[in-house]
Length: 204
Image (cartoon, rainbow, N blue to C red):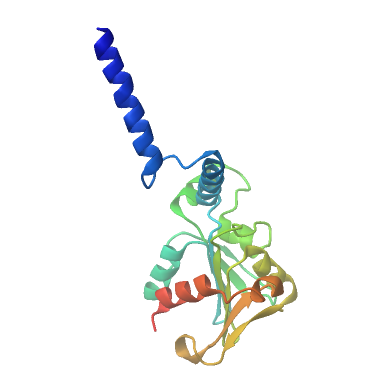
């Protein structure tokens, strides 16, 4: 009986050591804290739906979506299945079409005053996530591309961007692209992630 117990303990130790030395195993207390923080941020983003943002000014209307898959579907069909329409709510009196996810539409039915992520982000009440954010604003023949939710909020207030990379005529239908960065980030590196994601959405 004792021998069997010793064997079991030895096997457990071998398994523990193997876990520490293999990819995906326990990497130490600091790494675990970072992982837990990133996981919590990911879950919060899924709940708030604030990792993507698309705002398109078209034919006197403003279309706002906070989900990449829904945006790509809209590009194909020109339809938004679940939407809140606000007449005259745009900065120049435009009608604003604010997309909803299914879970947001259900929440709106249950909760008075509930607003989806697209509406809250358009109105500046919800910022994009700190890490991994992607956003676009299409207006006046230009596409502003954002990798930082706070930069988007600043642009919504001022209509200006501090720093960025401009590519004249490089966007769909010959639109000018402006990859927006705050100046501190721009001094370190190009917005490579935002550029890659834009290319993955539109090709080219």
